Length: 399
Figure 1: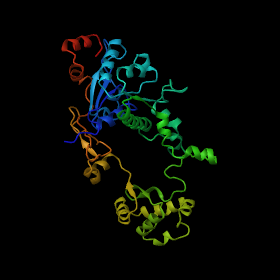
Figure 2: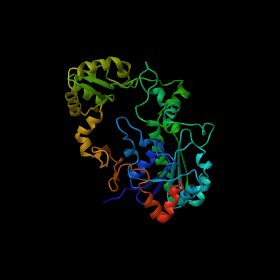
Figure 3: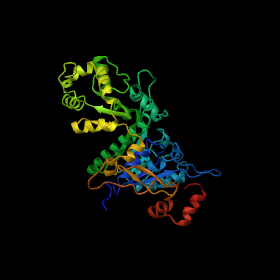
Figure 4: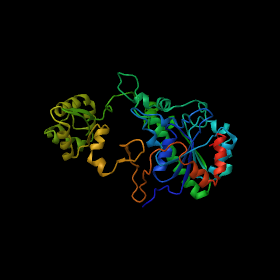
């Protein structure tokens, strides 16, 4: 069986919540050995580990996804003996991933200088709200703040309402994705030079990277882009349209595609009508055109409209929720969703590994595991600790 593209690489994950662990998930999905470290229980307390273990709506179902394929161990990084063990792990690893507030690792004696001394080829992946430098670096920075300051919150939602969130932790996930991308760049550099380095991924900058031409639109033209709801002003037709039994998205803003849509609507004359024949003309009459299309779609079911759009090669799609995804034959054919065995959940379905690689596709081998599930394998196997030594460390609250 083909292994993931990152097979043979080892990453130590110290992060929690999403901004760090999603980076670890992406790398584990593609074959890296990811060792996820969580703090053990303190005397008289029950270990809680990564807060993601408790997060979810109906049930705490986030952790089985974001911690899939990871080897969970416990280690107390606040104690010198725990810090020494981490350095031993770093010496045998390719990456270390953390998303604590900047300065935390240095406070524990585990900053870049200390860790790179143990392993000059180490790639240290650091995810934070504002980055490792600059006046805001020490601030607490959740994804929502990065989304606000990076600019996406101002553009999300309807102009008649306060700025909206996407409904997902998009800022955290973007920062984690950029962190993963940076780690692959750093790995290529290490292949050429043998030298490790720090990957510094800031949430606000990951969001800022997605902001298209919003800044030069201001500096060159004095234009500040604002919320526009479900449309992009001047780009038509491209909107959500109501059918008898639901809503679909249609994108027919290119001249040739608009001509095909007009044909599908049984009104080919609209393609050459001066009011709609060009991109600029359609943009100037955007609401008028949307009203015209809505009047046509409201008389038909989503299935009827989608069939007509497909026949004419017009991009269109239903707005999906989870049940739609589970029922879709394309999702099934590409195995976009997979069932993963779990000791507690009988019907655990999650998204598959993306992107798809032809020779090394990656795989979900197991969902997120209980705290310390791999202590014996890592401490006894990788580090060669005896059972007696592990027992002593457990008694001392180190592991």
